[in-house]
Image 1: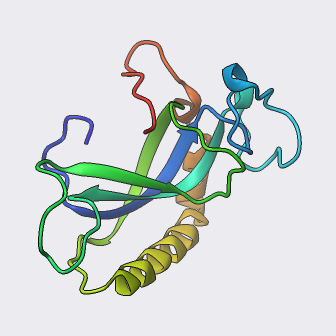
Image 2: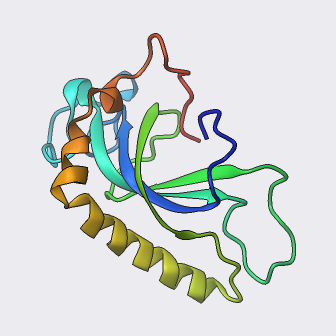
Length: 154
């Protein structure tokens, strides 16, 4: 992750800054950064910051039959309901903590159950003052320029 090959596989929590407004619209895609739902996640210029849960590993799978990728990957779940898809949006992540190691699952239901527990753990953790104040880190809403690779969500 970010050039660090020593990151342990597992589930993490933190903040995600995305260059979309509260509904999922980007300015260049017709969004104006204003309107219903504006507020909690809203940042400058239509960008917003929301809590996230992130899986670093080999993608969720169960029955331990085949790994779905040859290399490590990361998947981010933003803890917010958007009205639109925002594929192609830029995203900055700030990882605050580790929830649990990657697990093998015998069923889709047990995977879903753990995902829901992960989300609850992340929500409670991000409410703590020391983590909550990190939501205001300037980096989360800086999309481009020196030090940013301009990778897009896919």
